[in-house]
Length: 592
Image (cartoon, rainbow, N blue to C red):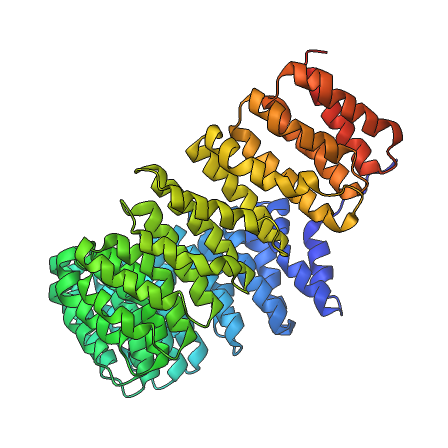
């Protein structure tokens, strides 16, 4: 039988010349695969020649796909010394009128520049960059802005001066899109230049950006400063070079500029260091928190935790404004502040911490459920990280056991557990434990399943902390009382019994074999006989969970017979499967 040979390049040509545009686009995406299949030599010659001719009749979507594919083709043309064969094709794409085509070509050109040697960049890339920087249409000028920072480190000293000159013209370009692209990439070029050249060449340009009439251009100065912190990493350099510009931006008349500054101010605080951040940056940040524009306050309040962390313990200035923010009309501001209260309280000195707790008392009564949720999370954070948290915070939690919003009730459970753990590290407070236990047991009958399950999880955690004796004495008898005495024939109670099984699963991890035999096994046996399929299913799964901590004698004499009885008359396939699985584990546990 004659072997039929296929030429991958020929198949690609057929796909790209197909009448269906979707076939053309998919074919263009497979260009790197074709280049790999035909080998480096044919890829450099035959493939590139065909694509160069094909561009004259291709659609914009296909050209975008070709432009993106060139970055991968560059990996299979035979090495860095052959990358120049792709440059003419990409230049042709970079001069297309459609912006997305130019952008795809510029991205691939950037990838090639990074892999090229210095000589190849000087000979093959610099002429193209010059034509793009001086192009009549704005699209190439937009694309060249991202390429100049990549080419700068590999250019000669004379070419570097030329690049800076081209970039200066682009920063003052009459076309707003070209100008915007230059400002976005100014920070990248600055970092490629190094400290000394930034001072000599870029700072003046950055100040010009701050003086732009359009606030849409001025706000890019914030991003440039942020990028430059990668070079000016030392506090003294940041203070001398960038800080005066940041101060000017904080006083800008446009709310957009101030909002942009609020978004990145934690990074400035990090570079400045704790001392400068406390003395210089925090006052500006407080001003942003009190800004008259809601958008600025929202942005600043979202950065509370980050800024306070950079200032370490000296956050007194920030704490003074928290009360004002909790009375703000914007729900987003209040939600952001309430989420940060816990971490700020941990960072504060003890004398300031009480003021934060007072703010929590206001926040926890907020009409918005998200604010209440965040505040409860903050209280939980305090309970976990502050030594001897004040009992007043637990008192603050009490009303939320019955909050109408289930997410608030869930956070109440978690915060209560955190306080229980904290109290176990100090002298035990009997009244506290009793209130907590009663509240959590009440949540076991909540009408939301997530709350019931969360209550089971948290009760298991508390038993783990306080010990099995506490769990047996204080928790399990009361918690299982209602389900143990309920009529197993009443389907209306089946959810309560399933909750009991979830509780048993979580608590049994911390009980001894004797305690499980006395307080748990009987309840599980009852549930394996339940008239409701869901309860029997959950009971079979619970058997698997408690087996490792149950004595062999109890498993052999009680659990295995109960599971075998389930197997005899059961019709539900899921229950049969899990009861069989539990039975198998039980027999293996007993050594059978």
